[in-house]
Length: 234
Figure 1 (spheres, helix red, strand yellow):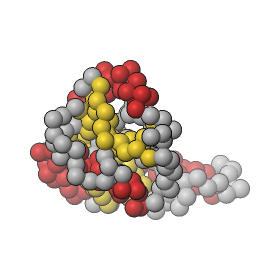
Figure 2 (tube, one colour):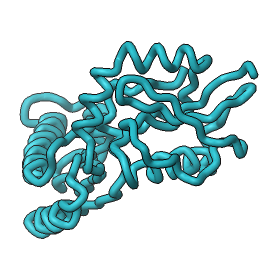
Figure 3 (tube, one colour):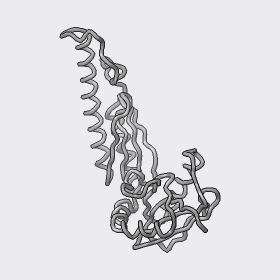
Figure 4 (cartoon, one colour):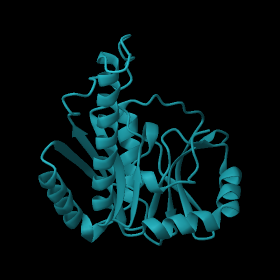
């Protein structure tokens, strides 16, 4: 049968059976292993999936089911490979890299954290907005720029403090660039499975220590942010 392989995840090779689930469009799950690394996939004549909730959730639930009894590297939604020969070649060529990543995530999960705050009252509502025309020394323009600078410095310091305190309770930490003035911190933390409660308690402590922020934790998830190097959609 000619077609294409849709890849859900890479996992450490295990004697455990694949999850009793179906892949996209009801296709059975299959696996192919090389050098201690297993790719889990389904075979299709052709497949192009929009990033709709039902497809995203099917992809995610298969990855989560695999995590129940083996280390897993999530693969980006929409990843396809031409055939088994191409998949086997990729696994063989990058086996050492994948095994190293699997060792990193074994027995661990990802917790997502978003911290929201209200910038200081004298800061501009939109840090990206242009200042007023009156930028002469001592005028409103100068006050505008000083307010923006204070907000930027205060936000950066608080984000660094929060990230450092949370990272102390994780074995790996990643943070994303600040997207909006309200979004102080967006981070991902790799946590031991039996350390999730301790991490969440630390997040609660951080929120209490900084009453001006709202801290939101999500997960535990498969370690998407720590699967750097896993194949991406073709």
